[in-house]
Amino acid sequence: MVSSAPSDPGRRRRLLYGRRKGPKLSPHKEELRRSLLPQLTLPLEPGRDPRTYFATAVDDVWLEVGFGGGEHLIEQARAYPRVGQIGAEPYEAGVAKLLSKLEGAEVSNIRIHEGDARDILEALPDACLGRVFILFPDPWPKTRHHKRRFVQMGLLDILARVMVPGAELRIASDDAGYVDWALERGVAHPGFAWTASRSVDWKIRPEGWPQTRYEAKALHGPPAYLSFVRRGNM
Ligand SMILES: C[S@@+](CC[C@H](N)C(=O)[O-])C[C@H]1O[C@@H](n2cnc3c(N)ncnc32)[C@H](O)[C@@H]1O
Image (cartoon, rainbow, N blue to C red; front, side, top):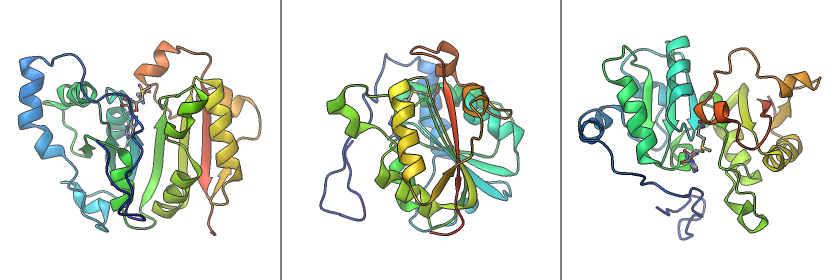
């Protein structure tokens, strides 16, 4: 799926992720995609206040980019019932995994976009998100693939637009190259401030950061946890 950015409607957007389809889904997961996914799908109406996307009243809305199997998303939804959680994930099997966890669960504050998180960011109005999670994004380690990394200066511009002043941007990675890349950009961006003051602040998973499935495997090295705050003036 390659779609266009609103700032340049004629331009084809770069594809950031590797695959949408995985192994064949079980009949039950296929059924959940048919029955439950349409009920939970985010409508994506440009400029609409995202709080109105949820069936129950919410005071704030958070976004998780690339939720994988949805473990972190569902844990945050349970921990904060008055916060609407939007999750984006293009990988069908990941979405199906989340659906099977949500089936019969008493969770009403999750909305899903089965696709690129940038579709959501482009549709959101200014200053509407209280938190954004980019947890273990695909590292794209080869130099020629760095342009596919989700964290880019242009993307931080968009996040600065949609996040409220004081909102938190969490980025975690177990790829040292990606950590340096994200830190360099986050620190250089005028819309964000890195909150760490000591090395333990980014070396040890802070309270309230539920572990993700990918993180549990820690494939490349020790994870780093970067927390930025959206500055009040920009
Ligand atoms: C390495 S996995 C990590 C998944 C999960 N966050 C975790 O920690 O278990 C990265 C995920 O990001 C998703 N992804 C990649 N590009 C994306 C994009 N543009 N929008 C939303 N998700 C994306 C991939 O499909 C993949 O599931």
